[in-house]
Amino acid sequence: MRDKFTLIAFIILFVIYFSLLFADFIAPYSKDFSDRNMSYAPPSKIFTINENGKFSLPYTYTYKREFDPEAMQVDYKLDRSQKYYVKLFVRGEKYKFLGLIPCSRHLIGVTPEGRLYLLGTDINGRDVFSRILFGGRISMTIGFLALFVLFPIGLLYGGVSGYFGGKVDMLMMRFAEAVMSIPSFYLLIILAAILPSNMTSIQRFILIIIILALIGWAGFARVVRGMVLSIKTQEFVQSAQAIGASRLRIIIKHILPQTTSYVIVAMTLSVPSYILAESGLSFLGLGIQQPDASWGNMLKEAQEYINILYRPWLLMPGFLIFIAVLSFNLVGDTIRDVLDPKSKVR
Image 1: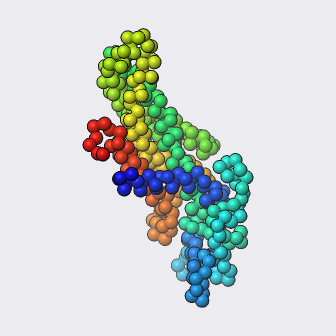
Image 2 (image 1 turned 90 degrees about the vertical axis):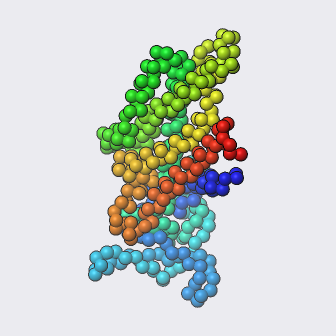
Image 3 (image 1 turned 120 degrees about the vertical axis):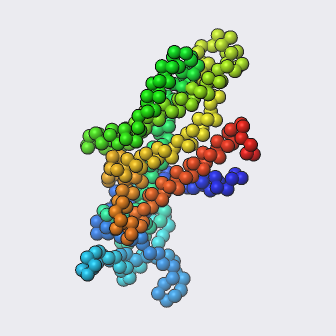
């Protein structure tokens, strides 16, 4: 609480995950909404002062698509013939609140005849703001799901290796080092490239989690093994051995809980790398596929310099990836200082 930067980072992460949890309610449109006539429409302009110069309830206008033959490009101009007032808890597309309760109310929107694009649209006329919320569910959860797979494997593997020592330790560590020597990102690219093209995004999502977990456990197991080597000589471990506790019980009940502080810090600092890995694969077209959204495949559309110059709202997923990764690193560094018994930070 005393570290202002960490507090801000924690608040940012809380806001992000809160928004992703209630994405169906917060987003003006569903993830499948598309208006092809509004391809690359700019963000809607919201006015609070009317044509008479007086304050008014927030309102917006729809865009009128026109073709400029001289510049050979499509322009969007405001159609000022009809005002559309921005409202809270407006009725819109139907969805299931938290996946359970049928509902049609959205946090913000306009009447069905109008359009509200808070961050513009993409090439298919899909609302970028809504897709950021739905795509973030994949990009921001894949790290935690991968950790739930690899951390139990790494903990048990490193605990067994460090406790038994000798030839068992040597063989187990040589295998772990062989896994660590595999270039992980290139392996992900190869495996993702050979996947069948008819796989759904959910199947790809699960497979990416498994691949990330099978690659990342070795380095974690190596550190746990080093901690176990020092912990197993402590008196409470020798006492457990003296009363006849089994080796597996000693490892699970007495030794591994002593590594809790490191595990918490490692989990916090590992999440950003998995967010970047998924985003990188999706950016290369090897991860989550369209029409399903993730921050990586949304950012892919912004790689053209014309979009960067004239449609900067397409860069928003990349900005959110940067903010999320930075926030996780700040929180992880502070947690490490708090849980480190040798730290002088109070």
